[in-house]
Image (tube, rainbow, N blue to C red; front, side, top):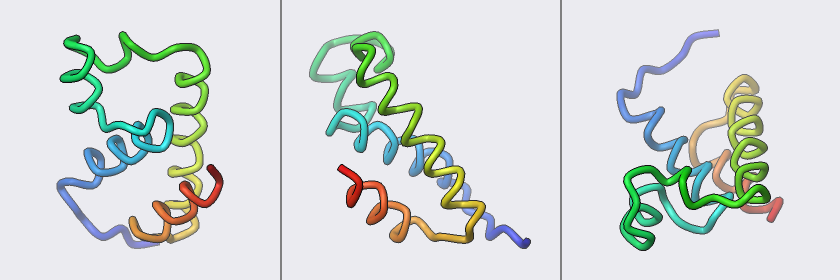
Length: 78
């Protein structure tokens, strides 16, 4: 399998996982709750949803899906 290099891929998928789990990006969480790390404000349910979203993203990437496909699949499950 050949991977297309995208220097923003990690950031984009990280933000997508947070958006799926909490409805907000990490930056939005930090700003709204006035914390240094978005993990500080997550409850157990949100932590579980975040981990599940990350696992789904990894599987979708291995299946060859692109960002838009992954985003659609994640938000279809909500």
